Image 1 (tube, rainbow, N blue to C red):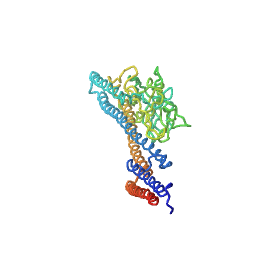
Image 2 (cartoon, helix red, strand yellow):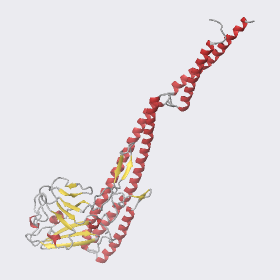
Image 3 (cartoon, rainbow, N blue to C red):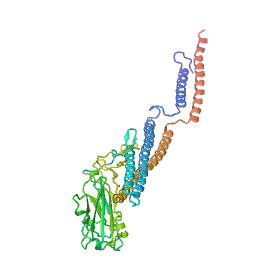
Length: 440
């Protein structure tokens, strides 16, 4: 090799190698310090983009999990209020059954009325429970109810198929299995219904042409009317808050009575029938079957969709919605819109109030079930989000996290090479000085 001084190629090559080793060692140090093998797009452009998207997904899932837990807390607050309402309604049913007993005088019933009034006030307080400043079960978080609202609708599936309340004579009425109800000419059939806290009632003496509709026909205000039997659509009961048809569970027909005014203003809180024989005894079979009217559609005022939405997914449409139904005593049929409370000051009123409390309990239990099922769903959602978060983090780790043992090995190698290159650079620079011996 020629001895030259202007271009020290050996030193140049050694310096280049030193720089490479130094850069490699710097990268290893950065990986060791950050714990990640991809610290910028320059390290791995596609890997950096993929891992960043996964990081966004991971952080979103963590927030979803928090949302689900916060939603569960809100629903537990609502459920607590409804649970208290159920407890109060159970007690109230005991009170009205007591009031219906003739061992009590009207003065005793007036005392029981005071207890009922206080309990109804507590129901109002329960309905005004809040979470983070939001009222929950006062109707403000209700789901959609189309205008003009829904009508209270009662259905009885214990009577024979084809029974028409306005056509079938009372003496011809039968049970579902075909056995006669045993209503005879001369018997007395009575009906009571509760509207706006007040009980209305009427009795008729059965003749050969008497029908159930005759019980209502002479009232000045036809608050409740039977729905005619429809041979083409016998299972139809009415329409719900969304305007969709409601049918009997078994697809067979039912005897249906419906309030004539929609919303809470026209709400019928209870419907009670009784059949008394001409000798004064109660026909329990007929009374039991006629009194088996269940509230299938509850009265609700028109309402926009104010359902509560829990965002539990990383996309806009991944949410859980729940409409919290009105649990105020007005909506439960225990208080009128003008503030009048359910009247149990007479025995007849107390007997009619038993079915009112049954209907109110059913509404509260339905709400409790709905809230509980959504709470349970949010629990499963939270568990699913946790698993998804773990898997996303694991995938991101494979792409972005540094293998510390391997990186440390590389760092040690590059450190040794850097030191060796430094030593060789000194040797390469020293070799040029040997030219001076030729110039002496």
